[in-house]
Image 1 (cartoon, rainbow, N blue to C red):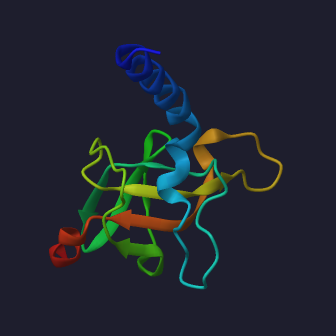
Image 2 (image 1 turned 30 degrees about the vertical axis):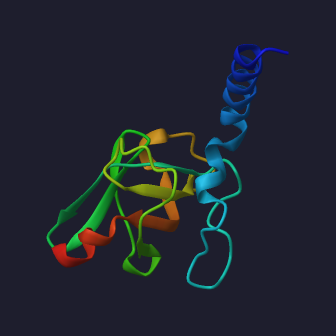
Length: 121
């Protein structure tokens, strides 16, 4: 096998593995009680902002309040930078038996903000 063929093969194999590893940047995240933040579906990049001394993150098209105890100020290896270091891990539930997307209740497991955001408060 020529070196060029070997190189192209290596690139193709590496490219195929990327989608499988995309969620790996969250695999070591733990909440304040030592539980995993993510179950391979509920972590995602999320823009963030500070409003009146409280952090909010943009999740599913809306700004939600993020409890202080869920926030970790750290950089994640593999961050591609699209949200300047913001990541949200959690889930949304509909209260009762309502099927109303406007009334979803969000539960944050972990909110990741870049280290420099800690000084913003």
